[in-house]
Length: 77
Image 1 (cartoon, one colour):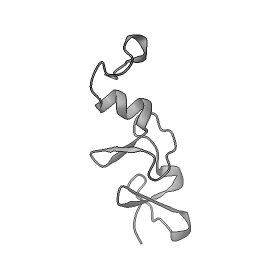
Image 2 (spheres, rainbow, N blue to C red):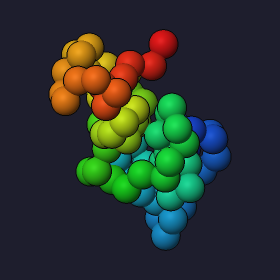
Image 3 (cartoon, rainbow, N blue to C red):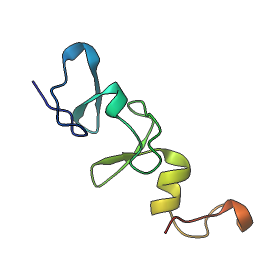
Image 4 (cartoon, rainbow, N blue to C red):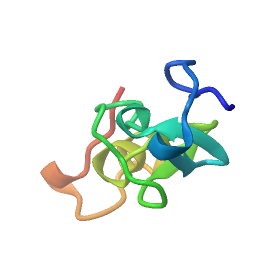
């Protein structure tokens, strides 16, 4: 039985969510930055960790200054 990459506990078949080639508990598949709950296939990945597409992945790893500009373009430090 595989262990969840987030909490390290066993993931049973009835509760597993498969994403990034690993089995997760539904509650453990969260954005690494903002902790928003994610669904398999609807998020981005960086170095094996899940991130929501907007705003976290775009702000952390997207090109700086890309988009509408002004107050809508931001970059986490």
